Length: 607
Image (cartoon, rainbow, N blue to C red; front, side, top):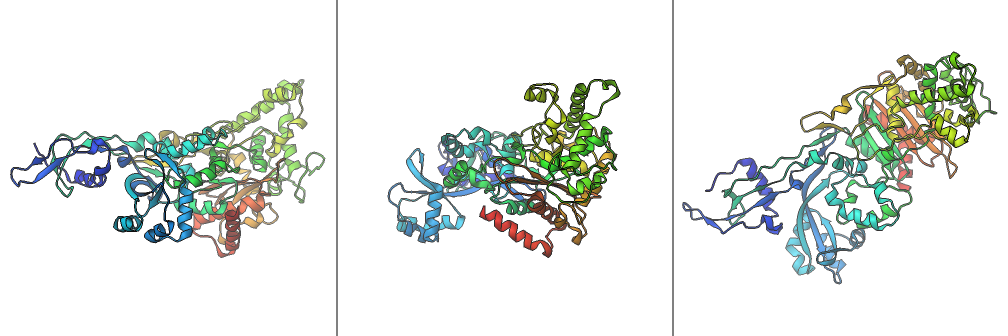
């Protein structure tokens, strides 16, 4: 019995029937045509599968701009024999260089019909092929299919991909033979939230006229459920801007809202377009990414843990204050015999001055006071005291979310590393190691390793004076909020007063005489609190690091930047961070910094 079809189902059917004729057997005529006894019209019964690719939810940024959605794509299969590229270019409106480049990027691949090349076309290009292909370039095959479409090239490691659409990439990755496939695989939020995005497939049973229009149904439909949209924390414009600043350089930038833990920008560099790993005509580009020694497919902020350098002095200072090893007014001389200090500066007469000048000998002695202080109960055993103090130091440091995963909503995350007393017992082959053998901890080097997420979260903790929400990339699932674990506030074991004591020094870093005074935003009325870091690298140029937040009194953005082999944190990492802060807080960068912006982006494009 023929029944009426609701309006919303007609809209879905109109979408499905476009490709029904060339779809799977399940979408073909289900039984003999039926004739309407009233009108005499003949209708063809169909059984149309509502595939999960069509009902999959969208990805939107924090301002509700669509970043990823399922849309119709036009694919042109080129003939396997000799191809007239000149005629193809004239047909599609491409010049000869574009034709060669597009074919080269696509690369031949094997399918059920042999070796072929597939190119993505726009709707206008597809219409030109439909009109003229048989006359101009014979044996072209134009097909249509629904696939995840990226509206922006930015955010590749965050947006990720559907596993079903990334199979060609997986096959390419396995063929590299370098063992990278399992380390590099990162499906982003598409993979992490796959179950919520997918929904549930079903079947529709329309009666179609000769024009393919539905006229009721011939059987009961199988229920389907639309996948839920994900509202990301990313600001798409800020993300694109940050990616232009890093470009082809190796490193990362993570910016988050310290008040909520929402990640505003998440850059893993070298950057690449988000659609590269699933697009059918990007095999050549994927091969270059897989073979690159710079590992652009490595999700650096989450998966790569490095020594943080001098930015870790903030954590050590907070712990030393908590353990009463120092007070804010503690003064230490810049004794070069202890550890070298690359900055020429006045004497650090307080913690604020020590941070402002980033004096290595100052923080050597801060950590020495912490490790060698002897509690009354251990007064006769300095070996036990050192072990106990290092254990206590690690306990406080771990409360920052270090040496463990923060639980970000991405498929893979590294925990980083903080050494234990037992680790040094084994590494030094004695329990009687001294502070001199572990002093590199005082300047954030040696055995300490932090991820980019942990660095940004560390800045957020200081901005909040001791608490944080776990960093996350999805702020809303359908009509609901984020996952419950991202709404639970976490507290460190450090008193808020000790974090307050760090702020004057971080502000002084950005003022005249500080290590990053050139990156001040005082000219636009924004007070930045920051800390630079230069990480020694035995295998090449030093790495540049910076963490900070703004405005210093009421923080709205915290940023961590790490650039490999870039030199000083003050000259390489800090400018990138403050321009992202200014872009977020004001919407644009002041003319004074446009020269910086052009120079940084130009270098990013060259590398």
